Length: 617
Ligand code: NAP
Image (cartoon, rainbow, N blue to C red; front, top):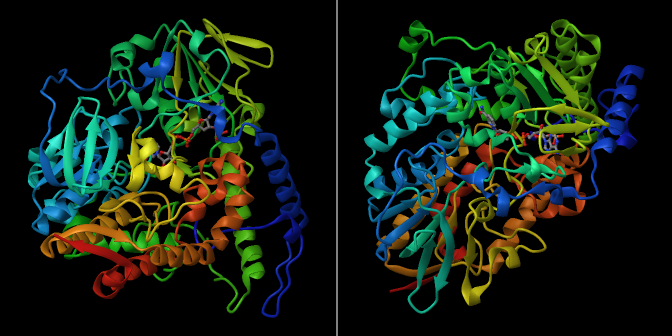
């Protein structure tokens, strides 16, 4: 996740940076590393760019199936009308519904493809799955529910249970339409209603529609030739097949003890799966394209004496402190105190009054120090020198979402675990019974794809549906050249539609629920007011949208530079720089979360009537 004061360093800056206030010179070691980063990046740039992935459709559609829903749902199609439809029952949809209910808006339908609330935590139940940020900031509404996570980094099942407890406490189940996939949102001009169609033949009318289905819900498959020819068992990490592996999220994968398994992908999910898989498989091949940054986790049980010392308001304060540190806005206090927030290392602070290039060199040096430690950690744990060398990441620390794990690297010392390092290329092909790299075939019984999600796409695409606004225009048509919105929430041509926690032109935070909650609260307040004022149609003006696009362009410059120089990932459209204007992170508001929250509040109080065209009933 990019940060505001990143260790950006363009090639032309390498080796020298001087300024009025302080001279920053990169050492020979540092300059050589940047050259290595450049070479490693070049190996990973693919001409296919984003087209390298395969969709879970056609003969691969089974990768999307829900292995967790206990009972098949049978119900008649719905044709009712509500004030608000919310697409998605993860944190975005749940928090939006809660804030709407608290604002007095209770005629709501939450449409969710899974069989319960929880979103990513409904789907991601793989062994080893845990929160990758501090549970005390990640899990929403802790003070309101009186719940305390049992560990600093809670397990998936604990987070899912918390989501369900929230849904019960806030009476969300009465609004839930589960096991139902939205196929289309279509604006009915005459009725001034959204018509929401689903795979269960529903046609629900709604005055307002919220798209809050997140970004991590469409499993992505690699475009490895032959993937469809594999005759063994295969599934995506977000659809873990415990019927095949045995056991549960805590391990006991007893059915794998005679099996050879390939795990493809070493991002946040892959890194968490490796240790449990290594304990239960006869042979585990970990297929790596780009090594992850694997930092110390240091998980621990919750300390009751710390809990009893907390004062009212602690949870929000801790959330703001964390994302404030990551945005470079807070330096005096570190409440979470983990590897995420250890951005700077020991002082000194950045040179006072430094210009952008001085800051760039300053942060680059710190980044290199950190990454040297990450690489040294690999050497200190992994015994086989060739494997250790292959596991070292060569890019700046926030080019990919960093991972934190104390069991991943030791797993490579086990005799049944082999790293198949594809040096940036990926596998050559998959056959009926094997994975193939560099002319060598590795026979396997099972392939597990920990290859991530289609986070690069827009929210509605991630949810697998289309949105038709005024005159039948689709969002993709409107955003063909670049994303256009106000605050990442409203877009002209699509009346009465609000995006919550979309990745574009808003301000996504490393701790996702923090900004999601702020946006959900804001959007609920706006809709409450529109309903109170009997507004039939609300549409953001093109002028307001233009103004926000200009602000985004001005504020995102630092992020864009950083992301451009990164190794390919979902942050930079897999290195396809022509795609950047449409992509999530380069179009994020670069002024940091506090500014963005202030902008929303001020606008709600003063700007709303100027920027929204309103037609009353
Ligand atoms: P990801 O970060 O996108 O990682 C996908 C992995 O698949 C990468 O290692 C990628 O390699 C690899 N890959 C893609 N195509 C390949 C190919 N053809 N051959 C071999 N490898 C290939 O996905 P993820 O790990 O599921 O994580 C996605 C996001 O989910 C994270 O950024 C995080 O926000 C969230 N997440 C959070 C948690 C948590 O809180 N516990 C856990 C899991 C995920 P390259 O690096 O070379 O592209």
